[in-house]
Image 1 (cartoon, rainbow, N blue to C red):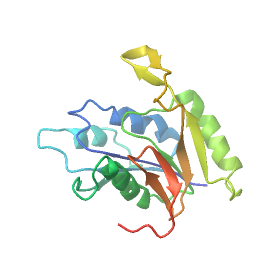
Image 2 (image 1 turned 60 degrees about the vertical axis):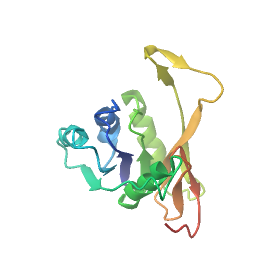
Image 3 (image 1 turned 30 degrees about the horizontal axis):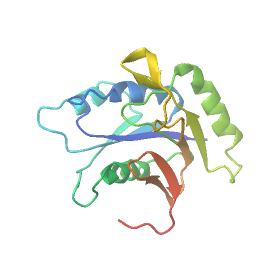
Length: 176
């Protein structure tokens, strides 16, 4: 069994997204981590942050964002699909640039991936969320903040990022 991690990002350093921590949070259980790195501003240091992880598991795919072609947050889904297309794992763990997985859950995640590897009816896995607000003692539990979301999917060609890269859906014959 092979597990790929993947994400997309642009200007994470300037926008204070913890992309390095996001990647490192799953690095112990993935065989590779693919990051679609958008065309960052000249004064942004996201590439250096990612490269400072210093792991041959981390692979950067350089991309160019096209907000005109993919408006209203859809470029996030497009970039996510680009990263996904470079993954070689049986299971794919998706993290957005502001998401991390606590280390205590890594053995359970790996165990579930092994358990359901041959069960083709299982196409993905849903994670529970805590949306921290301001610090690690406060988090949102109100309407409008999703409590669960798909973050592990099988590596299937017709599984695509949905809306503003919030989730995944099976979309046969999707074209650019």
